[in-house]
Amino acid sequence: ANALGTLLEAAKELLSDDDVAFILVGEGREKLSLKKYAKENGLSNVHFLDAIPKSQVQSMIAKFDVCYLGLTKDPLFRFGVSPNKLFDYFYAAKPIIYAIDSGRYRPVEECGAGLQVPPQKYESVVDAIRMMRTMSVEERDAMGRKGREMALRYHEYGSLADDLFACCFGEVGRDKASF
Image (cartoon, rainbow, N blue to C red):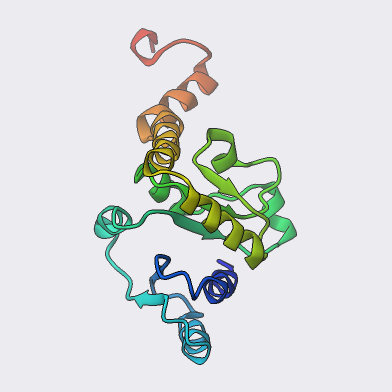
């Protein structure tokens, strides 16, 4: 479902760009076939790492300049998606290439945390990577900060609890509620 084949096609297109590397972390079902594809196509710019504990995800993401999140073009996703990776990337303050058609739910684009491209279109991923490369570090960092700010404001447990409370009890704040 993560459309990593699209990412490998982008890697193939960018093989001659010495300053671009693709790091895939995890143990998904498709890992062996992705590794085989990378080997058969001489993708020396693609590196596979084993899964890491959730407690190490933020320190791993900190090493990356840009994060990719893609899904297959599935009509179901037009109703919205909520992959955990998205919030990991937001929290890590990294710019994101978001290759998902999630209907009106466009979290990366809405908060300015990266670039949204059509799913399963490697050419669009290549264009997004090249666009990110033309940006200054400060511009990419600003994108990442927008994602982190959005994650903390709208997706942190305390703010989610406040939103739920407001939904259930109106505009009364937790400290003013009487039971």
